Image 1: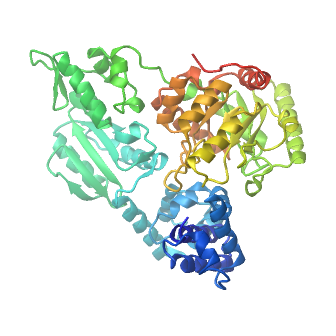
Image 2 (image 1 turned 180 degrees about the horizontal axis):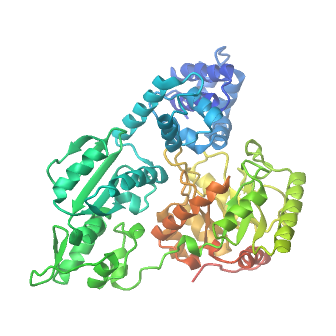
Image 3 (image 1 turned 90 degrees about the vertical axis):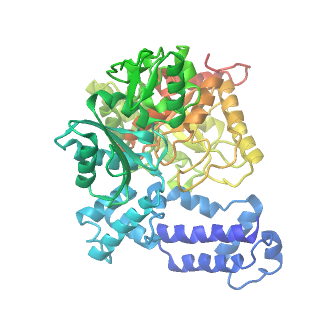
Length: 589
């Protein structure tokens, strides 16, 4: 590692320290160390510590410890700890121009704001202006900063884009000439990150006139392509919108085309042409030039001899060919999920009691909850000692007994999110791991390992017969942290072979594994667990997006562990442990 990269790590730590607790001395120490180290440019860090930086008074002991950590492992445990400890939404808010860590921390402390969406709502409804040292002028600056961020075309997380799109859609549907209006584009296809909002409307009268009226009514600050039925808008809050207004009979194909993606659309058009159909102006014509009425998208695909392709799967990666062969998988739906196996409670870093989490899960239609608080090595997230685990297990037994006495058909399972240590060992010893119904193993430290080291670390963890699920396998945080280096193909292949499920962590900041890796898992016969990573009852909403990403990755219910009953999940975990000494292949056929 060179000094320039080390200085960047120190600078990141200074920002996160200020965001975390505002210790002025600690922040200044890291900032000073960053400037000193940065001045040495591309000099190798180890050589610099022995030479130019040797005995440097400007380097505080904590900064020196970070530098030694970087030399030893190519990563800094303090940086990793802060990234894991700070809510992901606060890290995302650092992207807002002019909104520094101190202000973000103040908003979190006073209003518990931890997302861009919550920040904008607070700026608009007056709560932000009421925060000490903010005021109306600062709230206006925050609104402008959010608009500037959007105006640059920066990507946002799917759930933030959807909230804005639904707000716009509700406003536009109130227009007297709008007969039907739907969201399209990357939002409808459930891509992890979204740049623009795409909206298609069926209207009465002139589509171009209604489009202009809608642009005016929704507060468009800039309009491109004025005079036509399709407009590109930039709203006063910076949101970019592609709006298409069409006659009612054109709506189905207009919505389909606007949903995309471009490759999928072109492949379908090519397939239609081979059958003698042509498509233009959002109309389908047969060989005689006669317009073919299309009631809805399923009817459109059926007319072309194709299975219906769900929006999530329209990525131009083989789905049209599969639909022509009647071989497209019928994807998993949220309703197929019978339980949630990655959930946290107040015992570690969750905000709610186990019973409250269980009742919230049941209210969402689930049959069981897998409590998986952090293990003892994960001290910064409230990792549980052995005594605390025993207390938790006693509480779970009492809750299950209470449910049984009430006649409530619901069950709480005893799980743990155990750290996969740098050596590849799963936290706790074998005898203690036997106490759990299931074990999620996750990497939370030493992200700087190279691909070979990280892959070997995870492959070794997969040898532990107690491991049931490999949690968030690449460690990525969308927009804030890149995935660590790992041979995911090798990991997925071995997981399937030994009987460990790979997690699709449905937290919108993670979505880890991604949909492309889901397809690899399906092809290799590796089980996937859709985990909400819920830290509060609201976290169960993540299951909707998790199921959508699973569909996007061609996963069927049979590929997903938590479409099974609680007894079947327990049997899955027991089979792994029982077969540890024998040679078995657990891959799904």
